[in-house]
Image (cartoon, rainbow, N blue to C red; front, side, top):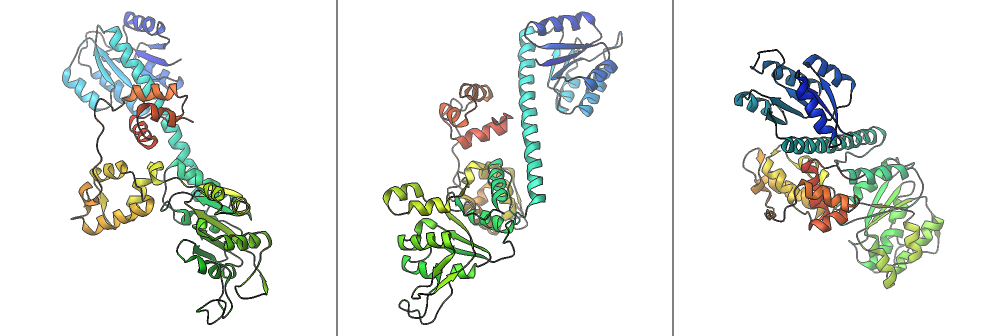
Length: 443
């Protein structure tokens, strides 16, 4: 049950408020003086304070109330305070509202308005506390990750990225293949580097092969090497990526582009650590940690017969799913700032960056910031400097307010995807509104 502290020297006022709140499932504590009120705040949990502005007989200046309010604000900066007085001084009210007072009501008060204000402030306070607790947990988890693991200077802030990093660091020392999935440009290679940096072969080589950047007939030679004369143009023997990665990690990007013949040989190497160069009958032995990545739907490729199911399960001992940048909104501004060249972001640019859907993910963001840094006039980058399409603002009749979002989440049992569908928003758009309105994400 929420609790309100009433600080008023008039017992009749305090009793009337106590009765009013008790009829609406709100507990009330009473204090007859500022000193007693501050003492209660020091030892009791209170969701909201209603305080008088004058406590000495025949005093109407409101100075005592101002002093009490400022002391409450100093000791409990997030606690909502409603000012209540029979002597309305507009200038004082305006100044205290600017200083953080939640509302300023005159005696006699309107019960309905007071209850509405109190209920809204209590709900908002509870949401803010839940949000602050979540942010504190996220900051603590981020500090622990940065202290305990080598994250290779990765810039991140969003909880979705934290979950991927936590799992990546957790499995880094296990000698098992890892499959990183996600759209192009999300940073899959950076995650592979972090796994390597925290693995048992951190001192070994980190070798990268993009299977989508080579003709299919050359991929096997790149992976396994080739003897002289193994194919047209092979004038001398060459070492493959597996040999180069011996004692370290081989990162196979765009693994879905590997042809079936190469898939069969890769499966054998994963199972035995042995392979032959193209054009050679001599087996070679290597010890390599394989991390692969793809933006393809390997399940659909298996059904189509273009990817071996047994290889998929061998590669997919651990799968890390890296979400698109639009699903990691907390990463956008930190990444943008990291890409700047000694310049800062104007609030209009920050809004434009957060409103963009980033189909090219982190790679697109990096390019946008590089271009803006070069073309912006002055040291502050504005929205126009980014060259992003102008986001169409939702019309007022379709923009859900805080109550609509809270109710939709309640009906959906906290399932954000279901609530966003009901509200006609994408999940990312709903998350942005929840963040802006201080609505905690469901656990």
